[in-house]
Image (cartoon, rainbow, N blue to C red; front, side, top):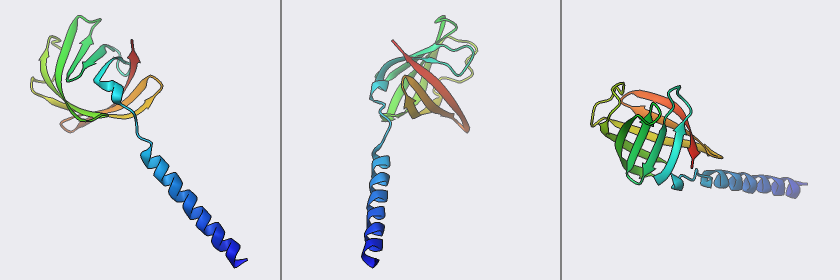
Length: 130
C-alpha cells in the first residue's frame, strides 16, 4: 500500500512537471509580424497597417492619411515604434514619440496586443489581411 501511494505521488509530480514545462514552451509565434498587413478592428476609424521589416505605416481614413514609424525589434512579439512622419492632422503624438507594442496572443488571424505610450496602456485587436 505504501509503495502504491509513493508511486502515485511520484507519478503526479512527473505529470505536473511535464505540464508546467510544456506550457512554458508554448510561446506565441510572431515570426510573420516583420512583413505583414493587418486591419485595426478596435477603433471606429479602423485603418490598416503595413509592416515591412523596420518600417510600420498605418493608413487611416480610407488610406487618405498615414502615420509612419521606425521599428526597433525587442523580440519577435514586441517592438518599439518611433514616429518619424505623419500626414493625419488628428494624430496627437509628436515626431519622435515612442510607442511600445507587445503581441499578447495570436488566435487564427487575430492579434491581441497591448500598446503603451508614456503611462497610457491600451488593449487592441488587429486582423491579418492579404
